[in-house]
Amino acid sequence: MAPHTELYLGARRALNGTGLGKLEMPTHHLVTHGVVVGMTGSGKTGLLSVLLEEAARARIPSLVIDVKGDLPNLLLAFSNFESAPFVPWAASLAEPNDDRSVEAIAQAFADERKASLCSWGISEAMLKAYVSGVEPRVLTPGSSAGEPLHMLSGLERGGPSWTQDPEAARASLSAAVSLLLRLVGRDADPARSKEHALLCALAERRLRAAQSAELSQLIGDLQAPPIERIGALDVDEFVPKRDRSALAASLNTLLASSTFASWREGASLDIASWLTPTTGRTPLVIVSVAHLDDLERALVLGVLLEEVLTWMRSLSGSRRLRALIAFDEVYGFLPPHPANPPTKAPLVALLKQARAFGVGVLVATQNPMDLDYRALSNAGLWCIGRLQTDADRARVVDGLQHAWQDQRATPDLDRLIQRLAPRWFLMRDAHDPSTPLLLQPRWAMSFLRGPMTRAEIQRARAAWVDGHG
Image 1 (cartoon, rainbow, N blue to C red):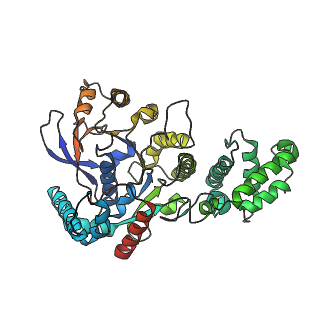
Image 2: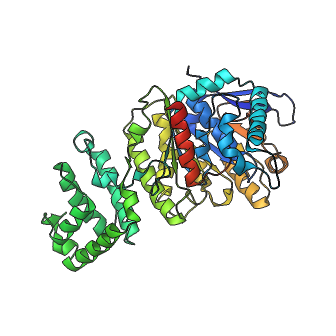
Image 3: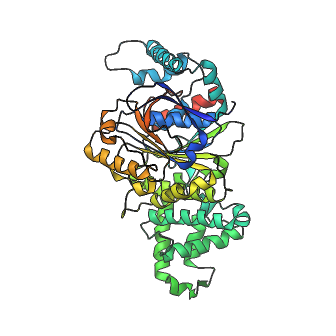
């Protein structure tokens, strides 16, 4: 797949509705990050999917956080206009009382896809080029629906980074220990938790010596510490024996849990390897947490984002877009002060620092009320779909006007957003003086069938391997 330097997003119009034409955006515009908001049915996930497809066509690796279960649809990128790939999905998509055969329903979806893609100038040859050039991967922590993900790999697996980049290894260890302590209901703050400091010291001693730091080994070390001091204090004075025994018992109960076992198997948390092409195809890595409850999502994504931050800081500076981090449905994970879930600090750091390393961040949500717009105020790209409530529109308009850099009179943004039709967005690009304008995203090359269950993710992964692996 030949790389593209322009991202083909769809059609553009002036705010008065005139001037329909093609909208292409240079890849480096995403270095300064992007925000996509819109109510259910506005086309927000479709626009995000198009952005990710275009990044892959430009050979930009992407890491995607999927909260709702929609983005594994990127596995359904069929390389032709035939109906056969739709057959396994047709029955579940049929309307009530639809008495057509599965084959007829599949053909109808195929015909709609062909007509829609052709209307946007996307040929079968372009589909084949895209599919042959992308390498999608779905990771599902705590589940075998996709690839399982070892959430404690920074603790239990160690690696060469302890000799090559100790600072990065220590950051990964800290994030893993924080997750472990949160799972047993203990203080997980590295700056104030004595238990965090003790576990990190015990684990680092083992990992630096190329020894195992599995949880069972650390439980033994808690009961009989192989070190005498933590900082300037004796171990028994820093964390008394009774408290260490209580922590060891809590960790042992966790270790004995059958559900916890799935968190300690599968791929390691290694962002550099995930985003490095190994087959000549562009990595498109989807971490799906739709199957987890709210607390588990926050814990898992906090560790994941800390790993992303550590990886980013290992890069050299760059003005070109070298990778994209996308977070679909960021509501609840980047709230305003004083709320502080485990995801907030690394997200804020990424939004403030990632541009210097050539890493773009895309966040999307249908619920804009609970977003920290101060963290988003430096985003260069804003795509705003229809929002029904006055409060939602006021929140977004306030955030957008904070991001407005020039002195031109701003249009009546509230009225524009209220009147937007489905699949139309108000777009503001800080790099493009012709904006704000109206954007209609092109039809996605992937079949966007809606949220996937775990069984459907397994089916889609198997179909991709059979057809493209």
